[in-house]
Amino acid sequence: METVVLTARVEQEESRFVARIEDLELEGEGESLEAAQDELIQVMRAWIETHDGTDTLGDVLADAGYPGVHEETELQLEFAESAPKAD
Image (cartoon, rainbow, N blue to C red; front, side, top):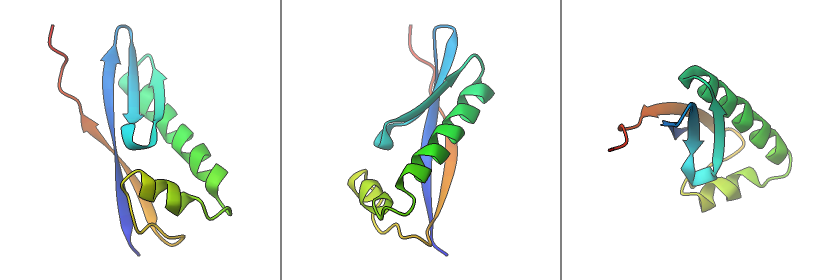
């Protein structure tokens, strides 16, 4: 089975954390790093479900730079550390 890795970055914006998959414009936020990551996971699951059975997921992912995704492809979400913002 082929696996496509989607990378999300988490940044702190004032008093909240925001986790984003920028290529897909998906994001989750929370008061902690873990809460933002958990929300993004839920947002991503819901997003995948909206495309389930419509044959559009592969096209949307291809447009975002992830070509070759098929129904059997496993999507894997990884979180990368973001560099601290310069003051």
